[in-house]
Length: 246
Image 1 (cartoon, rainbow, N blue to C red):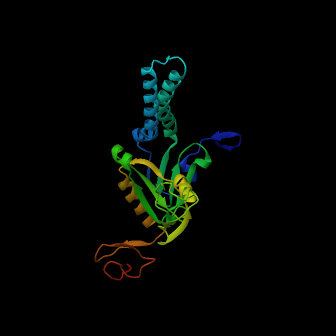
Image 2 (image 1 turned 45 degrees about the horizontal axis):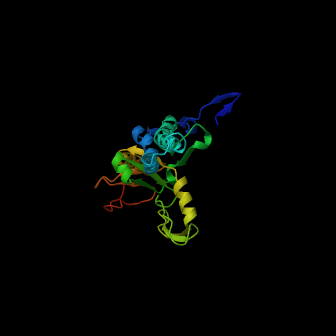
Image 3 (image 1 turned 135 degrees about the horizontal axis):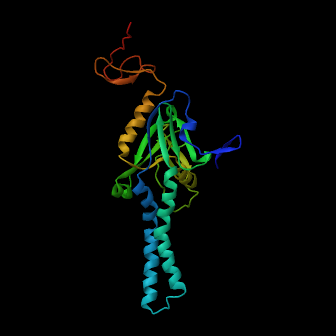
């Protein structure tokens, strides 16, 4: 859905969410090749299974016209359709870090944009699975009070999806008792920067922006340790007192 003003339609842009004088620290997009191939890797096992079924039917002398042809079309569809759909989605995926917010855009609608103020982000997590290592990418997750758990898919075990499990809360530093279904929903809906090249450098940019957002910070003149002057009367590293300039 596009935003409408005075009868004219406008595409949603990240700039629409910025305040006056808000500074853009970084903006970027997912790695295009990884973004296209990610869904493809997910469906390859299914495509291989159907292709083996197709070869078995051919070896048994089954007429190609009919079900075998449908299976072959299904294999081709599984290989071609996912990257094509990802390619169509790619232009709308964009991320931005400002001196006040983190913004994540995944589509053209207003509902496709998620943002939060930097001071609400308690931690920044980089997640790299086996596929991410192959593609040389990683996913970046902001940890907030709404999404306080490490982004990990919880496999189903005896007890079913309604089973309660203990999960470490990265915000409070305590263990919460959460249902597997709720935890799985949190995992699926957790906003993140998808398949980013050099994710640790982006993590550093975001952490530095979070550290400097809305605070009075400075470097200790004795040990150069950077700390928040509003929260610490002395340098937490060496204990020296900050001296104000006249």
